[in-house]
Length: 445
Image 1: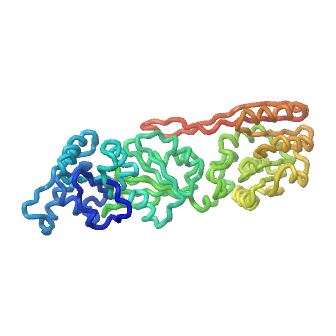
Image 2: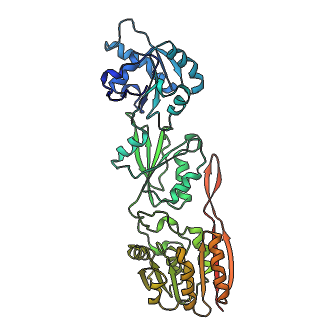
Image 3: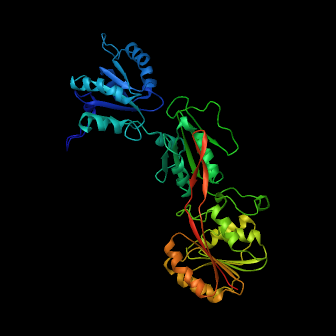
């Protein structure tokens, strides 16, 4: 029942109301961990509904209450109605409410957050329900880590394909809580998706079990650590972004095709970088010479140009990005990968291109609405035998830029690339798609 305007709900409002179902949330501590007011509601109830795991605690709890003198002498244990199949519990609840019998329904955490609350509202309506939530599992998890969570994202895998988790990881959230589905692999499923995304080193993996229970367990697992053999089905995973991926020996890295998680990114634009599969294709299309000048325009975090320098250390790589703060980020990524750019500029194309030597290879990764102007400036400076490669997201951009290359006498090649990454699905693997990319390439004779 909705509160009356202007009247606060005081302690007297915690008494059960005839015709109203009291929906009480609990954490893994069960009945004994409930607030005193919620326990009073159960003591006064003629009917208690809830999952079997909670109802199994009620009779021992009732005996403890009686021994403590908290029950009337003739009080009997209330009628118990399992809600593991909610539709089977509705008739008994309807009868109790219609007869004015005090009724309580026990739920996990906050019933209105991925709980039974939605089904109860659909069946009974808000006027016959009153909710008393416990802290949600997310609140408890972040509390155990002592980390503010106003910047956190969350995703549920209960009965769902894992594709949304893979998509969420590509946005590189600072913190991501994953409500696992033990029947589909639980924490192991999360771990496999994290590895498939190339982000194992970019996130701390926290396994949180039985939150709120006296035997709860919260532990950080490194990529090589096995999951505990006794992992409780009642668990969730927190993925917390590391301030920076650990430093690595550049000589130990693959020659090219580096994992996305190895590149540091802008905190306020996580995930905005060229993904590994596309990077590999762009590096091939650039036909990198042993020596010469490479322009990476709209360099972002520098991923493509820096990998090009790993392949061809004799190239002079010039990086241009208009976003403030990009130069030190690209420089740090270069140091981490063991390469030295010829120069890193913060500025807008085409104006800033005037300060650069004429190029042999050009990657245009930005430009937006000014991309035609940027391409025109590039074609004025591109040396004989030079190559320009432009990844595009739309066919409209392709239609705009292709004629420019043709009119400049370039040999034009157009391709479209779609990549999928394996993600766990039940006992198998499904393919989660990345965004398709059009690649426009022009080669000067």
